[in-house]
Length: 310
Image (cartoon, helix red, strand yellow):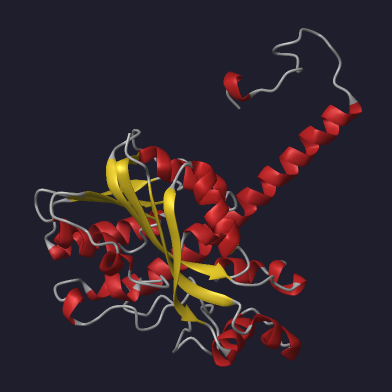
């Protein structure tokens, strides 16, 4: 922890004053919370690393959002299936498509213009970065940010095979974007923000790196109702982009609190009975009441917001 992040009164700023029971309890609570965040991050990294290895080997990367690697629903996934038109992916390496684990097509909805700089949060195998690079042209640039080494290696190989030069893949976490403030014009992301244990920080970081007038344009899983406790406790459904998803009202609140304006959430797919059943099956949850509770309360959505001009 940095000096500026330390709270008083601790020994660094208040001499030898003793630590109270309340302070010790707060420290233990923070430590537990940070440990839980790290555990979730490790689960996500492991699952998406496995997905990258499958895609690199020519298999569909069914180990990300949606059903799990060993799910009986693996041949069809309710979240990640049928997101891209064949014409727009012409020239994209098949491994990039196989590694696609998103819930939408943000590049098609973000209205990218030639010369713009784009950042993809959680870029995976690189498909949305490569598509963005084509849309912004040689005078623009597309960054991809990912924390998983296997995904970065796959994305860079896909970039090489596609022959795209206006792309740079960065290693890092979306809670700590490794770019200076006011660097990019558009932030996209495809079913990744829901995986973070600190979504408020992700959104603040997105606001920081956007230029004034810049656009936040992401596809994400969003909730319309509350999740039952067994779903909230399921790590499998967290890495499947469900149990960590934000309610649409909370998404709007966090974007507004970070300084964004013109916030909108547009449903692109609302998950019905069969979709929900496939997701629950993948997590080993077989209670029929859960299907009823979740049906219609989970959706893929396009989330838009703008950083006001200075």
